[in-house]
Length: 181
Image 1 (tube, rainbow, N blue to C red):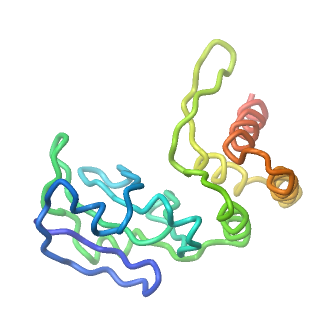
Image 2: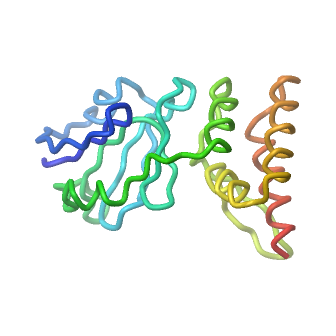
């Protein structure tokens, strides 16, 4: 099966033929904790869920924050397939320019087991909204510098007191949702 491999450290994209078996993705990352992202239409992006704690390089594909290497395959229904996007088209979507807010927060989160993409539900009025920590970071990244400083300082306090980073992200998501009212 034709795949694209994005090496976050070297910033290179390699096209490679791989044999997909039940454990291929886990073997590729040498990990059993894998994130599956559907950032690209008709594709699946596999990333190592341990990448933050291992302080791997962050980058964006479109507006989606990813950390560490990515294995990209096509997706037909629920089945993996040959990758359909070209190396050149993928390269045009990748942005390695990650600002200080993201870098600082990811560095702080490296001491936690937080998963950026694990979803949680919050209520806004009568509506239940499903969000994740990646959305929280995106939302606070577009906030003003004082709000970003507040976010970072409060995160430091939570981590210093051995608090739960996931609970903190849920709290910040609630604040962001209320601010959008």
